[in-house]
Image (cartoon, rainbow over all chains, first blue to last red):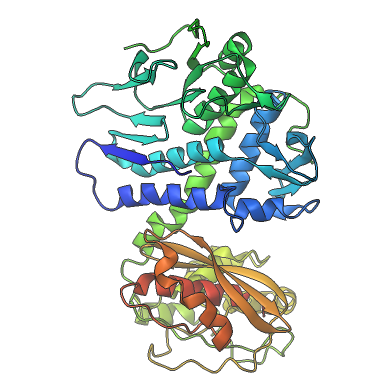
Amino acid sequence: MGTIVTIDVVRDAPGDCVDRAFAWFREIESRCTRFDERSELRQLSSRVGQPRSVSDILFEAVRFAIAVAHDTDGAFDPTIQSAAADDVSYRDVLVDAYARTITVQRPLTLDLGAVAKGLAIDAAARELQPLGDFAIEAGGDVYAAGHNSAGMKWSIGIRHPRADRELIDVIRVSGMAVCSSGDYERGAHILDGRRRTPAVGVAGATVIAVNAMLADALATAAFVLGPQAGLALLQRHGVEGLIVTPSLERFETANLPRA
Amino acid sequence: MGDGGNTRISSSLLALSSAAVLAVYSAGYVRTRAAADRFAQQAETRRPFIAVAPAGAPPSTPVAPPAAAPPAVAAANAPVAMAPPSTIAVRRTKRPSKPVLKAPTAIVTPAPAAPVSDPHAAAAEAPPVATQDVAQAPAAVPPVPPAPTRYRDGMYTGWGTSRHGDIQAAVVIEDGRIASATIAQCLTRYSCNVIAALPPQVAQRQSPEVDYVSGATQSTNAFYYAVVDALSKAK
């Protein structure tokens, strides 16, 4: 993921659960990265047309990514075209939930970056659950449980998409993940899966959900779909969120837990 | 076959993500947290790998004691009797012989004991686990040369546990010999880089008897047990 992971524990952590929490990031990253040709993900993409049994981690990450793609009609699409096939899509990846196999039907690469990062945060959060109060941050995605050292819900700032050092809003959460998708960190880098062009209707989308995998995927999808369709997506899934357009127009769900 | 096809499965994304996290975490939980407890009292000495006759050989090989015997063994060697290789084999082997999983004594007994009750299953599933009577074998016994063992070609995986987490090994068999061994999954709390020298030794020695790595005894043992587990499936 190439991201810095920060774990904030309010009290002394017993045992080695913090070590184990970090271990989840290493383990999930090493399986799901597309930047290492030896990764399990890359091995999966290298066999076209064959159902492949994969690890629990890779299976769940791919299954969820493909499910989100179906749900958003491809606005969120983890497939990346290859030189051999430039019109691939999520429909070219078959997930067999019973055999727990994945079949890549055409030459393509899967980008599980967002899903894997979310999954790692969520697995780490499970690991830290005995602590009660903690926060995990990885590449702008946060999961916060319990309360901060002041005994309050965790305060999470949402970055202003056009002003580096400003927050456009602050929310308070406990037991929730907060994930943002924006054009400010890496420019217009999120592709609209339906058109394979950079999505431009949204400057930043933030989603609050019970787990980071869902929050991150929906934030990415909302970013691609644009403000109205994105907001409808969040409402359909019963999550809270805030979408800001390049002209700083705000679209938000009814119960954003503003601080 | 597709998971959902073109149908909209929007309402299930929340459930799907929650289930995914649970599935991934549970798999790791079994191999990390529980392993730490399970092996809290395990001796650190590695048990010898005893090569057994390959599949197809007459079952006259001195296999495990009959089902009635194990309790005494387990009682006599309580802490040591938690032989990891057989535990793993029992836990992870999907054999039709359910009694293996149900009989409490079978957990501390080499797996072949139970199939005796079903001769057909025993014949069909011939390969016993790689180690047997480990509870009674002195820990210092040198490994039996595995030379006569011919494995079935293919790739096999196995798990090894340690109190610092588990390791999955993948062993490739070609022409009946160990062509390569690799660490397929490293769920130990320390990086598996510390034992990077070990996987090549498996093919070089045609045996899971790898060197110990100073300071990484637990990881070494987990890898060893993982290879033993994998090889037990290749017989």
